[in-house]
Length: 233
Image (cartoon, rainbow, N blue to C red; front, side):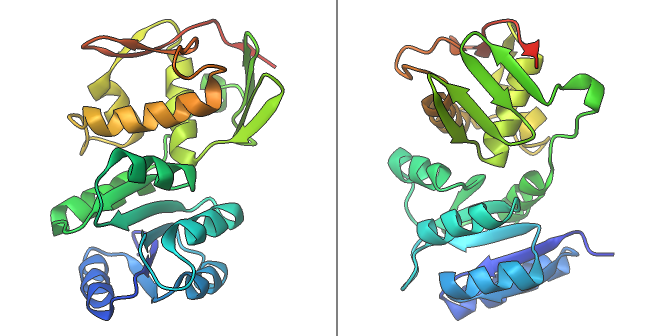
């Protein structure tokens, strides 16, 4: 039984071969594409659960491909990049990526990121309302949107999982490790800098003034707190 369907998108044949061998050996069903344009076709026919997408490709680049794939599917997307700056990571998140891996990477690291991205936070209907309001903020978990100040923006799956967990623990200081492991799984826990990038991007969508956050505040040396009492709609 397949552990999941993965589409590998990279213009380098050797990387595609190595990743196909690695992922197939771990029980995944794998297909590949060498361009963003080809990836869009494969997404529609192969229907992957996860896309491993190189950010630097000729023709349609990785970021443009990521936006197009995200508009067509809820599959997890991991961006592969040789760059490691925060600006590049935020750009990937803005395009709809769930995660990013910097080349060169080890096989255990790649497989850990794949497992984490395929793992969705599973919540029972009793534990999370479909729509909630906190002050001027309206979160629609079903539509994967947030609305504040008259502006409606879409959340990536991981942004949604982060916000869901924080609102379920409203007015509590949630430690970094707890938040990482709740959303990404037990393979995570020490990647505070990594979490900081996601929170910074989420604040851009949730806060009226991301530089002076009202809803998602930092608990120094501890983690993050969601302020307010969520009301079901």
